[in-house]
Image (tube, rainbow, N blue to C red; front, side):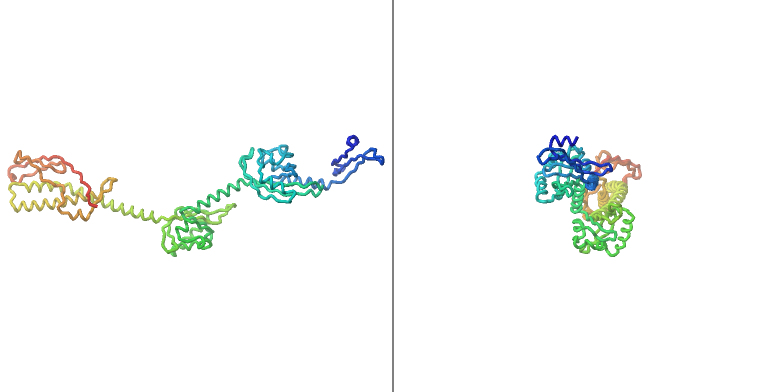
Length: 450
């Protein structure tokens, strides 16, 4: 059949065939011409290409199993070969790729003028294309970042035209990881907290801007030095305990201690320390976050002091309240005694002195009550000035009022409603009298003194 074809077309035919032993032969059939230039038959020739063929098959097997997507292009940038990894990576069939121009594949994802210009120089100028980045929304696989590299390859076996070998690497995950690391590095560097990385020997590896601000040392002064340079002498032993816990994989949260700045000043700090592990899960170091808690310590001390003052105020208010109740009764009795008709001048002087002292005691109790109030509104009080005022108006700021309707019956205005039974000094021999009092409450006003 092949002979008939050659005789009819007068064109040679070449085929690769196997002999009975399975060895590859190259069969060539050419038309035979006589000296008179007449076709007189055909000439068949066999060439042993078994070694070449087996080498090609071996090479193709290797290329097919390379885990990197590969394309072979001719001088027109048309795909001559695509390995299985390429088809799997881009989810395409070989017939969708082989025989097509590179820049028309898929949704023309490789139609990048700069890339085309570089590839067109590979064969004539022996140029290399190295790590050309292409980020694109690829059909079926989504947005990816690919690195494209290309080089000239020679057909040293059959001496055919050189081709372009194109390798493609998906670096999307690596790119995302690099961006995540860059963001993390920016966060660490811009953090107000001191963030330090150290080895398991306590040697400082990294030092951020927050650490420089907190401790006063620059990165050049600390990286490569022992972390104990930040510890007061009496706290150096803490480091061995911390490193021991880290080697056991423990995390240390909010460990409050004292550290020393470059200028020698001591700092109250809170430390959070975590082990750093490598890709094999081995602990290789530690990260330390240090936060200045000096202001918090001062606030806690101020709150404790405030609670003590508040407790003292509550006690003073309780005592003042307990004193004020009987004091009011005594004040009323003294007031009644001072207005007794039979009281002589000396008695009136004593009564006036007693009233004056009672007013002073009443003022002190009122001020004691103002030391503590169940209120969210602050009350300014000048304690020294208030305690020194002897004649400040107190509870007894006015004399009891009498309506004069009866000699032995009086109406008194008092701070609290109470019934007092006593014998009037002028009529003590005759009978006891009961005095009715109007109930009258007066709220203490805050002092205007700061």
